[in-house]
Image (tube, rainbow, N blue to C red):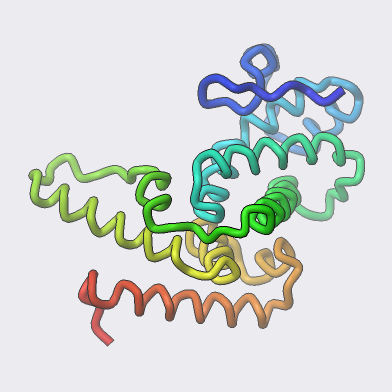
Length: 210
């Protein structure tokens, strides 16, 4: 039976499952083995371990809190159902991200709507602001953050995805190619074009020099 996903609080997993997972196990392979052996709460630990990271990444991809939450929940459900097919020649999170990316792509095709600047303004989380800065400095830093996030949201999806994976998730070209099922050369090309487009979009607002 697929474990129930929670609706309240910050956890995607049900509060009961997360609170009763018992001893913490950091090794993904062991948690996967225990899940396959019938201890579904072990999968709850995997959810607890990766849900925030996956949610933040999907938020940059889909541009909407609600959509990101739906994608992440769908990804974990699919991962649980398909766990027996997981080949442990790659990291669990890489496999999980691939499932989430496919879920996001399916959602995008269904909605047929581009991420808007207004959604980006509303949905991207706030970054920490220097507490030593005065109100003018805080406002300026917040405005720069908003402009950068809005510019990222306006990039074509194929460029935005590789940019998020490289610059925000820190994946190497080969890992991105594996996740997106693309040649490494295509990843490099898309990342280059994404950076150029982002730089051009921010050229005036951030006074970037050529």
